[in-house]
Image 1 (cartoon, rainbow, N blue to C red):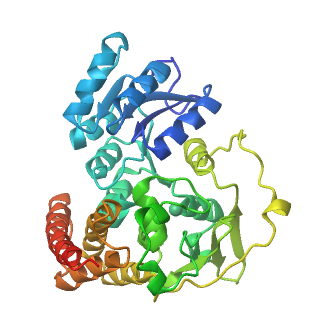
Image 2 (tube, rainbow, N blue to C red):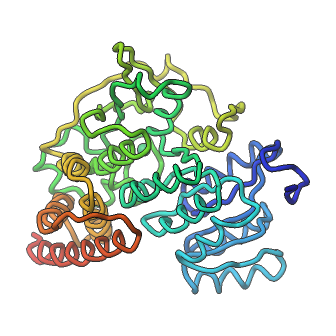
Length: 402
Ligand code: MG
């Protein structure tokens, strides 16, 4: 069926919908669209709370549909839109679902934060769209449901997270039976090399200073606790079908090697590149093709020495908690993710100490009885319980704050 530009599906122009277009990944994705305006067309945008920015994006990219996170944000957007010719399809999860399932979209980039994108990713899969996934919480919470739906519908899930994007590149064209293990690299965050005692005194402002990547606030804190790497271990399990004991983490402070795979003969294949999310986003949008990039080339002489070291699980217990959740499978990863979101939000508010983040998570995991999570309703129920429990634990830890 010809689309708006008269190009057939699968033709030269890929029509994309972006969930989370006003966030960090969304803005990088639009920079990729700018660099490849002849190959990419934006048909849907879902923003967060920043109505002014979404209005600018609508004016520039002229999508057919748009959505915002809340009614208040949508009202602000309405003041701009009488002249913009876009259909506003809603707010919250419903808005995301409407944008993700729009008839004209070939590919849906899911870069909305937190767990609100879950229903939208499933809707995109059910409508046969290719999914470029930047939101790791979707797989952590509902990896079994999402990957099973993708298999049933014959839909590809292309990872945008730089590590998984790297692994996807390393595995491209290989038989899965050749894969021995995955090695996820971690920058180590701003607190690499600190002691547990030093970490107890760090503030949100300290944690928001990431050494190599510019990202949103929640993921930057997750990088400081190494929970981001833990969530990525779970994400890798679902994307590549590897067991927990086939996924290793190496701290690599230079963030030049984005991740590696070890094959059965002992060869290690790595993907290297500049630390700019436009690179993995472009790969996901161009896949299976490759396009030239306007980014500066990686300068290995300037990068200098590349170092690798084992992560310190005593100082950064969140990574070990993620392995524990993955090994238990079932509902425990949902609890891990929910409790982490609650704890990180309270740390960002200045109410919880940095070292209390893993304490909240481990308390919720210990109190939970793992159950099957075969439906989104079950996932949401466990998520709701874990958030409530984590808030209670966090309040107790806040009152003992020194
Ligand atoms: Mg990553």
